[in-house]
Image (tube, rainbow, N blue to C red; front, top):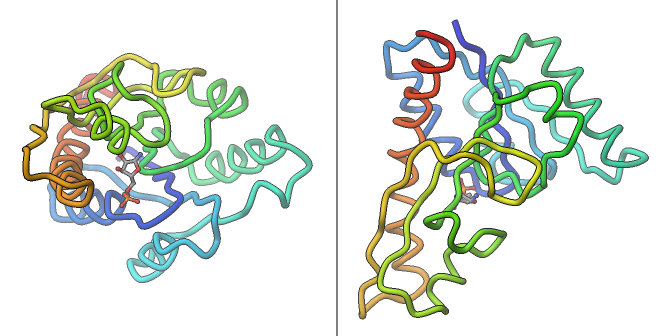
Amino acid sequence: MINIAIFASGTGTNFSALLDKIQSSELNINVVCLVCDHPDALVVQRAKDANIPVWAHEMKEFENKHYYETAIAQYLTSLKVDLLVLAGYMKIVSDVLLTAYPGKIINIHPAMLPKFPGRHGIEDAFAAGVSSTGVTVHYVDSGVDSGPIIAQQAVEILPSDDIDTLATRIHDVEHVLYFDSLCKVIERDFNR
Ligand code: GRF
């Protein structure tokens, strides 16, 4: 059994899509917890509704990011977590977690990296007037959306698109690509 922790900060549509696919698959993946930096986020309720344990604390409850991540790492160790799956987690992961889980943290980004990294991948691509953007799943390193790429899928930007229609199509791609990429990572990195 591979134990994964999902990290998210907001709405949690990727959290729900992953959980649904994992729970209806034959794969030996166990979603052991949600880690969230905003206790009031919608994703926390989604996890509670699904009976997934939640660790939800603001960073300001801790002296600094080091202590915040140390508390997370201790919680993950107690649950024997193997892989961290960031799904809309809006904090930059730093030393404590990168050292505790080397090569074992993955993220999804709503653009074709290395194009349009950062918080506003969808808006930035739309504003740039490019004809296509996409979704990237990648390993997390100490940079911003800069780790080795696991999978990418392009999404065309149509002349009729506004931000909302584009975002909807990107999210639809995310909800499939993240599960497929997770399967690939588990097969390749955990020999399952
Ligand atoms: C997704 O677009 C993801 O790529 C980005 O944050 C968004 C999270 O959406 N990192 P949701 O909370 O999963 O609905």
